Length: 129
Image (cartoon, rainbow, N blue to C red):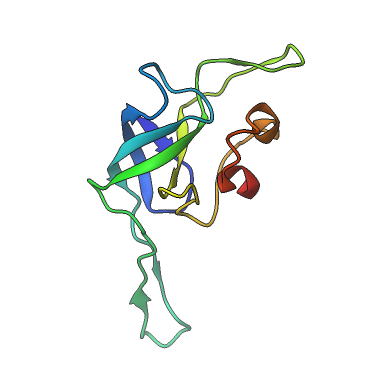
């Protein structure tokens, strides 16, 4: 189970396949996930007149199968300068098959070393971080 840290509408996803190898996914790997929990739809009213409408900005629903990129792992990653970086949870960002993020924002902590660690994995996810 991974947290989804973008605003695509998914809250918790489950990894079903790693597209690179038969091993645990590392930071930067593309995986296939199933949306397990959807974020609650937020209600917003337009002005004060009582004619408010519920706006649902969720682009994914529970049970959808999507591609994702792992951006945080509990397993520590050794940086080139000798420092190791680990996180409190496992997190991903949902992408489409072309590699573009589904959401428009990425929330949470994300270090600046992603593009330098994986220049060959130059997805537009790294550009939006």
